[in-house]
Image (cartoon, rainbow, N blue to C red; front, side, top):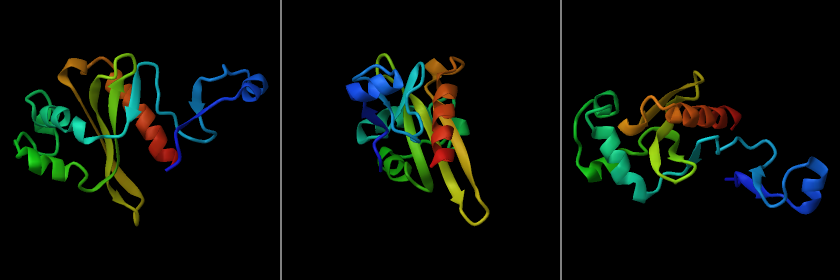
Length: 143
């Protein structure tokens, strides 16, 4: 996988007017950083946060388990089941996890896939998950 950012050199900065040393997107790479959120890969350290939001009362009934509470080991095994791509949405300023966006159940013959997003109840209605979803969908359609 290509890195999502490169560091500008002083020559690049003079040519393009960008600030030297600041990370920018590689040409043609979809953005992973928005105004308020950042998309990053899901790690094992995120499993507990994801388990809580995916099984919680606020939105767990809409998610994969439809209100059920699987064992944590089962949840970890199913996290990548039928998933084409998924990213954790985190706050840009603090790095706090906000939610998850994913593309799954891809049907390459008929050319479609499903999209899903879930967020911490604390951020529902804030627009943070929507910003992460826009960044994610842009990356899915560009790749």
